[in-house]
Length: 210
Image (cartoon, rainbow, N blue to C red; front, side):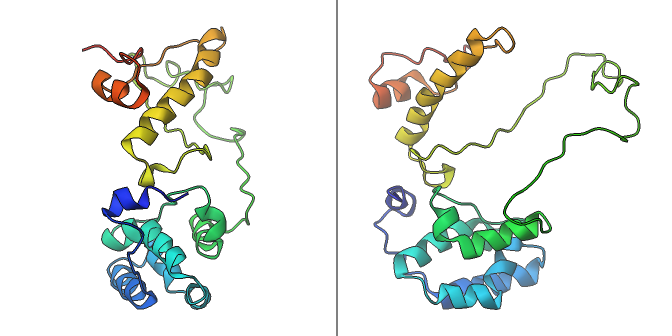
């Protein structure tokens, strides 16, 4: 599954990461920023013991997932799965990171969207921006997390993966566009030449105009 590792590192999976190297990097990152969850977790005794049981290929995967936090000491989280299987294969690491990030709560994270008791809301409890004092038009970006097992996660995505992922999602967006309760449109930033290179189609049907 980690076919993208070669494209990221420029060679086949022979990073030859060692526990000593990861530990040394984690110590430096943790010293610089004790709140770096990636570094902090790598230094835990139980995680160190588990790392000693990993074959070389899995240790390389762990190193790749931890690279962001070990390179950027000011990171708060500092680690990112690069493939959906990482959450299972590297569970002793990722489970502890998630526990630390959510301050406990176990593997099931419960989200409460209730606004009961929140001060400063309109009497009807609706988050109407005009009632909250924002009379002008507002541009808002919504970050959406996703997980399609047919594709690696962003850290290992190739250019072809990204374009094919976009094309796959268009089917879902078409359903939303046809639904009167949603509507909307799709605006893509993938250039026509890249779209054609990957898909074979003459042009990207949703390319945003300048």
